[in-house]
Image (cartoon, rainbow, N blue to C red):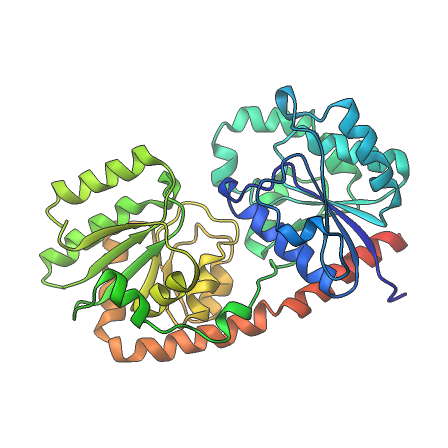
Length: 385
């Protein structure tokens, strides 16, 4: 099979980080593939958060092309379709990200007309939890609007075997499994916990960290209730909740902590980014996320690369990989999380060893070049077929 550079077009309707992990995941894939010499075009109807150098069309970086804003019902207008058509036709393969936008089947239709194969990444959108939310509407959408896109796809991509298992009932064929790409560079030289201690204070109490989008599916109430149970048991912990999102849910969680009398143990930090975020991971004794659903959850490998053990649920599609790495998987209940936190803290001296083991696992599992080679093999096989 030829090793010549591929012409790969990735379509994501919006490039806003606020919509969740789909955008970041797609961007990371594109960046790595471009650095490996492929001609990568990033096609979007909203380039709000696209990196500046993607607009310069230089070698080694993706080339960003912005279409007109999406119209009613999330569709591309005729001018945008006319602009996208030659780009799709010149590509060796088109990679469409996510499902629930009506512009996606429009791009697939352009690919079909041009004879260009396309790949669809489902990004957790067919997980059981996701399909239970407005499930009837999604089932109708699958059988009508995007049926042709899914049936005609040269490949359908999941990020983990658990995602593939849950999605299987909705797919016309087996999905391929390739993990997300993760940029390891920020973790080569960590800033140390001092930066976070200076900003957020120290103390002797063990630190349990939640760092994610503030949303009801993350089940922050489980951690607050677990903290209350630990207080009743005489176990001292400091729960730090970092992130922004749903203001109403955040206010409800702050009230919950107040009503349960644990405001001295539960702190809401807001958005934490950059070196301060890495330092916060390092400061924490463990990272806890009682999520109801998470497709991949880059926060898990982030914490592990900072040497922080993870406690989470089977709600994340990578729970099997996390368990194999030595992380703790428990039921999504206050008692289970209280028990899990207490058990880990009883051997607090062993936590750095667990964290280091997790970091080693992540570096092997999510090696960017290794994952890029899997994408290259998928794309080349798609083109060959």
